[in-house]
Amino acid sequence: MGMRSPHLLHLYSHPAPSPSSLLEPEGRVATRGRPVARVWGMQGWRLGWCLFLEWARREEEQAEGDGVLAGWPGRAREKTAPPVVGLGTLGPGLQPGMADSAETRKLVYLVTGGCGFLGEHVVRMLLQREPRLSELRVFDLHLGAWLEELKTGPVQVTAIQGDVTQAHEVAAAVAGAHVVIHTAGLVDVFGRASPETIYEVNVQGTKNVIEACVQTGTRFLVYTSSMEVVGPNIKRHPFYRGNEDTPYEAIHRHPYPCSKAQAERLVLEANGREVHGGLSLVTCALRPTGIYGEGHQIMRDFYHQGLRLGGRLFRAIPASVEHGRVYVGNVAWMHVLVAQELEQRAALMGGQVYYCYDESPYKSYEDFNMEFLGPCGLRLVDTRLLVPYWLLMLLATLNALLQWLLRPLLLYAPLLNPYTLAVANTTFTVSTNKAQRHFGYKPLFSWEDSRTRTIRWVKAMEGSAP
Ligand SMILES: NC(=O)C1=CN([C@@H]2O[C@H](COP(=O)(O)OP(=O)(O)OC[C@H]3O[C@@H](n4cnc5c(N)ncnc54)[C@H](O)[C@@H]3O)[C@@H](O)[C@H]2O)C=CC1
Ligand SMILES: CC(C)[C@@H](O)CC[C@@H](C)[C@H]1CC[C@H]2[C@@H]3[C@H](O)CC4=CC(=O)CC[C@]4(C)[C@H]3CC[C@]12C
Image (tube, rainbow, N blue to C red; front, side):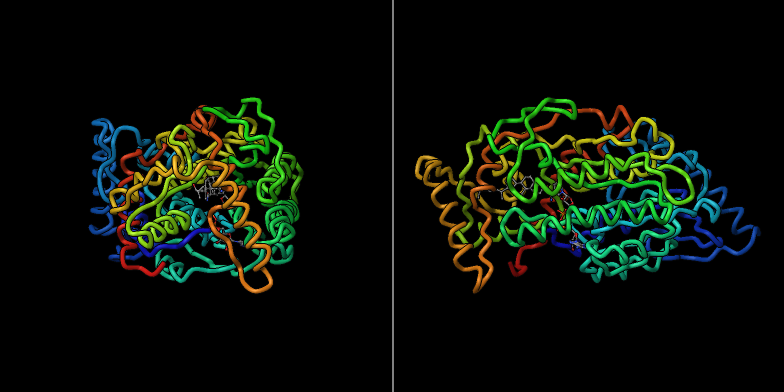
């Protein structure tokens, strides 16, 4: 579902150098992605750099105190963002201001699905926000060419082309990793893949990841689950500003939510299992609501659909139906933070689920999309009077019939089908602070930032082929 955009590059690859990233192992001085100079020995050069690092750290702390933070690409952020050099950001192993050095780079991470829409953001966020990384393994069925750009930095980035349904490939990729972030999945609600394939990837693939952790001794597993594990259910019950403890009849028929629910259950049940070496496996699952941001394929589809229709999109969903959405950068940040905190807070976080949330406003799916597509020249025509719900249901059903009839010849997979219409038409929003209470999560990107970045990405698509 994800579209890897070259424009992600500027997001995470040229941050304002923060002290801990300036002095790389072996004395190399680098900002993300490229060594800019080599510092030799402890002569004046290195002493000068250490003094500079100390000055920069104090400047950064001062900036925090003023509520205006530097250090993240592009510009200082509002007060809502966490401290750039807070313990949570650097992870439990590092204290604020501790200069990066070889002995801190000791962790091996594996990100499955690391070339997907979310996965790419997780990969870049880890390189930006986990100073203890020595190796980052990116495991995916389809590797992106953009990975090459990441191989010039201080962290060893290992691209692994592999299939999570193949246990031996997963075991080989997991062996020696300290942390696995498992985002790989078949995100299909459009009938592109068979139910069997969806289960094979989402359930068996997750089983393979769990067993690989147990067999090879990897202790920390973060799973990307989904709001769909909970709802909307087949009765289309609304879930209005609910949280992880809100009672809700989570009954599904569609292969995607069923497979995600089964995989999540496997991950949570695996918490506490003994891994090779005698220690316990610590797992947790994150449940993003509808993710948006740079690289979101569905947003891209809507944009090109609007261009084809003369700059118009037609409202099919009442504005009153709220759909929770969350910016991809904040979802990636939550994955990184959970991975950093899981060891220190295993008793509290192990076996837990956390909704991914930020300050994105509650709106209908279509109105929310217009926050980005409107500034790019599209407008939403309210056709609800012209296209009543029963007619939409008929169109959706015809789409499903056409898809079935055409399957032997070609793949017909429009956005509108009975399932997507039902989901879009059912309120599902979360309101929770469990992630903040358990591991100090605060959104890294404000709503304004998330919106600006997404608009910038959509605008960069102008002229690109659909
Ligand atoms: N996009 C969204 O709105 C939401 C997504 N999620 C979850 O987030 C995760 C990532 O989703 P997206 O980035 O949106 O999807 P995506 O399709 O962009 O990324 C999934 C990645 O997994 C890889 N993959 C698929 N099958 C594989 C296999 N057999 N072996 C190895 N890699 C394989 C794909 O090549 C792709 O790079 C998924 O687990 C999804 O269920 C959860 C909530 C919302
Ligand atoms: C054609 C219109 C009815 C249009 O409004 C349909 C929109 C529809 C394609 C989306 C509405 C809700 C989306 C889903 C929701 O964000 C929850 C999801 C969670 C996931 O884990 C994967 C993606 C998705 C199922 C997401 C898919 C697209 C929608 C159904």
